[in-house]
Image (cartoon, rainbow, N blue to C red; front, side, top):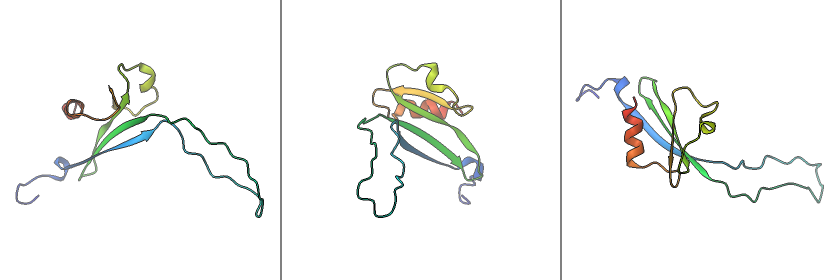
Length: 107
């Protein structure tokens, strides 16, 4: 930072994470010593959505980007989402070079 005189507001850390569309089952409560406990598990495999986030060393952030595994975006995917977020699609729901530069270019 000192060598190149970068300001903390200009230094960002970026990461992506996958979010499953199928919830993991919650905890099951049962009486201690009970031999059989009923529970339900989803056999649905679900799909992953990619979430791209970045935050600066000064505490600022870039609005996130959500990437869905589809051909076309519908307004329902954006409903009740974070203000300023970008919503995009790719064949597999993963980030690619074009989407990354579109996200950075939207700043």
